[in-house]
Each structure stands twice: as structure tokens, then as C-alpha cells.
Image (cartoon, rainbow, N blue to C red; front, side):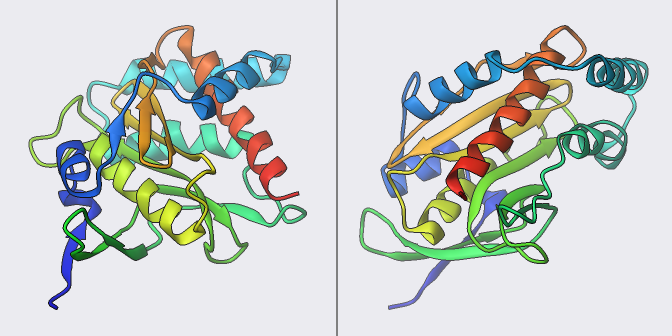
Length: 222
């Protein structure tokens, strides 16, 4: 049997639903717990000052930054401030590292899913091993080619398959310009949060979600 191939950049929510039986639901325990944990986090004065600086840069440049500039000046510093490098718990934040696996679709056709997520948090220190979180960034609200939520979910599906723990939540996030959306995949069900505008007070929510994600991953790797 000839093996089919599909890159993350070619994946849409419709494709993933029709071929792998994934189903969008309003919410999942993983997202509810993630949000609740984020609400318990208190930001320090230093963190608030940092966020104010990041937000000021974003407001001044969001209309003309390209994708690389948005990542360099805003998204990267946000993740760095949380510090996802953790040798004790053996996980790290990686960028554009290739991940792939084969997944059987509903017709029992073996599909090779592959790609390089913009961001990936996984076990491993120098190279990713078992993924927990996948991140996709888009500069514009909607690109003419590609679907950020589909790309993110396909990477999450690969991570879930690699881990061989379908009952364990797989986390994700995609950014379209100033708006951040958080995703969770549990089994064949997935959900997407409301959008959070980083140019508003929602920036605190976004940062707390990243910090809550770190604590969740520490628990999973303990």
C-alpha cells in the first residue's frame, strides 16, 4: 500500500475531522483546568513592567511587523520570560524542529503527517522527544494560504500519537497578529479558546496561560 503524506501547512480543521475523526467541542477538562490554574497565578511587579514594555512595542509595530519581527520582538520575549528550559524536569522550548509520525485515517490508509511547528515544548534538552505543546504563528489575521488552527492541531495530533497517551491532554496555541487562541486535544476531541487580544489587558491572561502551562508540564514530568 502506498503511504500518503500530508504536511502541517496543508492541514485544515476540515481535513483532520473528515480523515481522522477529530471533533470540535465547546470545552474540555484540559482547557478548563488550564484556565483555572492561570487565574490562580499572581504576576510580580517586574513581570508587569516587562509585559508593559512588550505591549508597547506590539502596539507601535503590529501593523507593519512581518512574521519574523513579531516573533523576535514580542512572541519570543514572552516565552523567554516564562523560561520553559527546565533541566530538572527535562523539558525545553524548541523552534522549527521537525516532528512526524504515521497515523491511520478512517479508511485505514496510513498517512505520514510531518512539519516544523513554529514552537514546540517537549521532553528533551538538546532535541525534542515527547511533545506537550505546539505553537503556530501567523502575521496577518488570515493568510491566503494555510490555516493556523489546522496546522496547530495537526502538530498536536502528531504529538499525541508520538506520546501514545491519547487520554492525556495535548496543548497548543496559534497566534494571528495580535490575537492568541489556546487549544487542547484529548482523544479525538479538541477545543479552541476565545481569542485574547495582546494589545489589551488580555495580555495578562496570555502570560498567565503560558505560566500555567509550564506548571502543568512540570507536573507531567515529575
